[in-house]
Amino acid sequence: MTILEAHFDGTSIVLDEPFKITPNTKVKVLVDDKSNTERKSENMNRNKKVSFPKPIKTGIPDLSEQHDHYLYGTPKR
Image: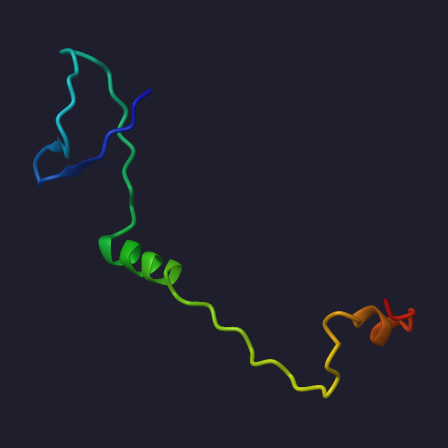
């Protein structure tokens, strides 16, 4: 199976790039129901930067290395 990009020009389905197909070859057409604006907004959402909350100042300088000690009371490493 080969997937080809194409578009509908109002009359016919037209391949976006040339592809050699023998006459009378059966083809299946999958229609993408999403409009161009929907696709653009999906792409924009995909490219959005993710922001993380600012770090909380705890006053404990080794909290990231010794979190088990501070959470569960295990001995420091």
